[in-house]
Image (cartoon, rainbow, N blue to C red; front, side, top):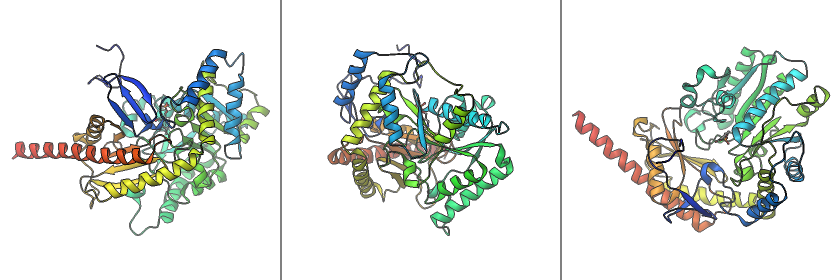
Length: 454
Ligand SMILES: Cc1ncc(COP(=O)(O)O)c(C=O)c1O
């Protein structure tokens, strides 16, 4: 019996024993193709020699130094690298241990900025339904997934949620993508007006929505319009790129492809590629300047911020991405993945939408393609797909509640940037088999329940 409080108290997990490239091997010797990088984390795959070496070297120098006593050369070099590769307005980074911590820090930085500049009345955050920003209370509050929020709702700060940019379901047939984006921006504008522009702290959004909606890409111009509205009211723009950032979509930051410059960018997963727990907030000069001219102190902190071994891992991951030109590889291999998914599943009767960017792809599953009717949530199709995929030696990241936190199923793919073309073919073929097996399973259940009812 395990003494770990696992995510689920039902079922037994295999033990991951080793990793090599895009494969994870369990203690029974079974190999799994890691087509999701865990949860879009392992961007360099497993056991990358350059990253392992950098971590060993840092451990041999010093493994830990508290940031109220010391900075470290490795943390400074990582910060230099991140700022040098960030949008121009970014001047600093705050280094934490994961995505939720990055979001918490971003929310507090945004609030403190307005206190510093004499606008303490600003208290509202605006975020989007169906988004995921993490599981700590602040991050959960800005998140828009109803199921995740529900039982903790009494503990959450008040956040206004506007519509997600969900073209497959919400763009009207008579609307162009641009007009749809303009409609969403108008809704955002109305929300700002209702709250009072000078009462809003920040807008927080995943540039490409990941875990809770399956690689939802913004329509052209939408984020630009929202950014302009924020600008008119002095509202800060927080881009949550914990999942979609650090190269996953083919540019280091997903916002680069939207031509918007956020005030704060939260990064994590692909920053350290899973070799160490690390996240960060890239911070605009305007915010750092206000704190510098004001109290000179960000009122925040954790024991492990700027952890030297985590910084060494992240620096090594980022250097490999640059040295091996992996952003171009993501674009190339992403195009190959998209083409193969289209060829294998584009006409599948239960695949409603194939979407995403770079090596960040989502498939939305439907009971009926014509009406876009989802599967009955009680069937838990997403969980069955995960089980069927694991049984075929494939790791993908399926989730339910795609549409509204309850209905809808999708599968997220986020393979390591080093994935090869033959491996992409293998991923698509195993995924197609897993989908068919899972859907056949729910079909059998459906037939059983109809027979019992009749
Ligand atoms: C967009 C986004 N933000 C924040 C988080 C939270 O990150 P963590 O799980 O590292 O706390 C996640 C995790 O999946 C995420 O996808």
